[in-house]
Amino acid sequence: MTPDDPVVVREREPSALRSFWASISAVSAKESRWRMRGRRAFVIVTIYVALLSLLVYAVYQFMYDRALMQAQWESDGLSVDFVSGALSAQIGQAIFGAILVLQTVLTVMVAPALTSGAFSVEREKQTLDLLITTPVSTLGLVVGKLISSLAYVFLLIAASVPLMSVVFAFGGLAPEDLVRAYILLIAVAFGIGSLGLFMSALTKRTQLSTVLSYLIVLGLMFGTLVLHTYWMASSTERENDGRPIGQVLSHHAPEAILWLNPLAADVDLACTATAEFYQFTCSYISVVTGRGAEAADSMRDVFWPVSAASFLVLGVGLTLLTTQLIAPSRRLRLRRRPAVPPEQPPEATPPEATPPDPS
Image (cartoon, rainbow, N blue to C red; front, top):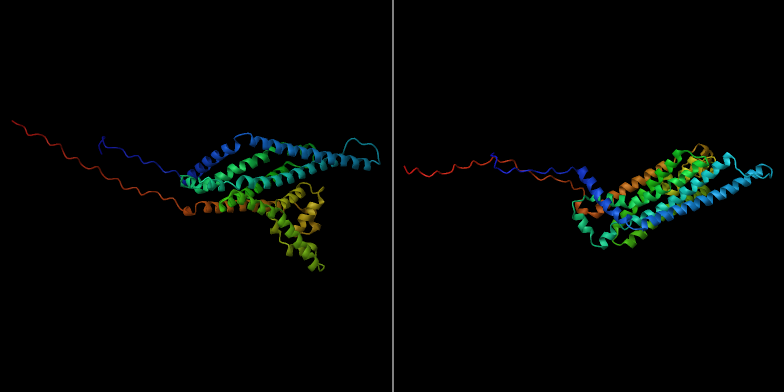
């Protein structure tokens, strides 16, 4: 090989993990700029925080007036202008429960609206085929769409942290109670958002995917609750033959019916955080889990971790199914490296012919 021979430089192909991360970054950055551009995003966040603030004030005023009346009753009608520590803790616990339920309802209502048009809009604009033919991996495309859509939901959840921290001023709650609440909210947002993304890939119209997503969400929130309640009532009427009520209900009303019900998970969180105040929540969860109402005092973290894990499993499964619906021709396709031919030794150049010496 002579110095004049060209040097062949072969570019190293990026790894699958690096290519996957680059695909997620590219898609999520593009979608996030589009969603956060303009005033609409900030107006919605402002309205969301304002509604939570009004709720907190209303709950505080109601519980404070109730606590004053209870304090006056306990003091034999004497005028009281302050509440005891126990009553103050009840105010904080009531604010925690109200914010948790409202955030859960808003999360399950907002998440499908943000994800149900992710791919159906691309079909309507006839740009989905262009996205599939790009070097972006299909899984990276789906995950990037999901992250950019749920980033707005996570922003709304994070905006409630200052208001949720107000409960520490009243007492009755520990920091880990708030951590549990936000873990559940993130899991619910991921599962419901993946549901909207799946329906967007399954249908061709945004309106249809949005309607189907909301119907499924309403079924998970209220349909499972009605089914479980009816199942419990019917089993109690037919087979309450002297056995403990917990055994009868656990045998005929499966706990798994409510695993994807975020409201049932909120009830368990209220019991875990404020068992002394919310006796109904602990009694209900003890019956749902088959332990019986007599075990309500020992109920701690028995239902909501299973519910959060169910939402995470649902999100992962629907994300993988969405990947297969978007690009079925790339299903489980392993990327193959092009065959590199072996290096050939340089051919020997014939010596240049020298003209004969005329002498």
